[in-house]
Length: 517
Image (cartoon, helix red, strand yellow):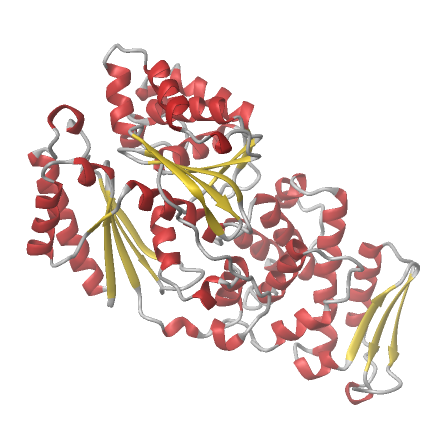
């Protein structure tokens, strides 16, 4: 363990800003992650709060293979790493990347010739590599989870090729305690093949080095390629409603049972699982063993898988305080939704118009409402017959961050309702399973409200601003200012009727505001 790795708390303002959403002209940003098992380049559209990967490729160099026995990075792994970084540098240059960072972790940190590798990369590829300490590795992995979820609280475990880091995520910061174990995929794989009791060895290390404060936290955030692959296999075999790793949540007992199932199978059988490549199947037993033992020792209630880790934590740490304070889901939604909408200023107007729609709204519900407003015109170019289905499918699978599966389901159902879709559509069945009856009703009311707003205002902020929607115990009323005139079309009335049905009220009416302003 080490000294404090605290990060100052940041605020999450929940607003939409077309100017902020228009910052798509920012230069691309790239990072090369030299791990113990693979070397990866990710090029993001920009260095920002909600970065989208434009390019993502890895080379399986296995730097950590044999390191425990020799203390050295093997000649072949050394050569392949230099060649991979040279190629990645060429790709980044061709893509117009103006900033390219590179980090190295456990294998390079431990190897006697690790600094020689860093020098060879600098000389032959022109890339400066920063060797991260165990504390930094733990910190950036936890910051990746902080950057990728809404106020996450729990223990972050990042299992790479060479090591396992544990740290505490505390909403917008990383806790003081951290620990790093030599329990990466490669050393654990070697331990399992040595004939020793790998399970007892892992248990002993965890018991000896884990801070007591890490035990019995409600959530364990699982980070790393091996555990992401395990999540993909679990989703495929359990018919998950949302086929996205990030935010996938399962009870601890279920995660341990599945890990034990993988442990009983040879790699050839594991490779037959959907989502598991043959390259990854070799180290899957090691990933399964460590997950099982960590969950047994820490005893969290649930496991939440994160697609974001060290790379994204590093990126997050490079941002200014003000930008770190932005909500990742809201930012990603407006970056996608506003530039392509018919009237970018209409989404912020919708946020204000729907602010008093529900009597009670907590911050988590507010951010979903703001996100939905940002995405509300996502499908306007689609044919009317497929808008509801296409919009809901996109939000279920788009690489948004800052949300879990039930929140994706809420957005999908609400967007479907916004485009006049029926909630009994077969393709919505999986999403609906993730929502309580109250959440389903809320999503439908919000979606139908946006449908009304677009129809009567023509998607213009000025007309919307001079109107008010109120939902009473038995009556739904849309009040519109005189300058817009009272809309009396069947199209508006039909959409009001859909909203009334969702809200469970019998009567709906359109009236003229006595005064404007």
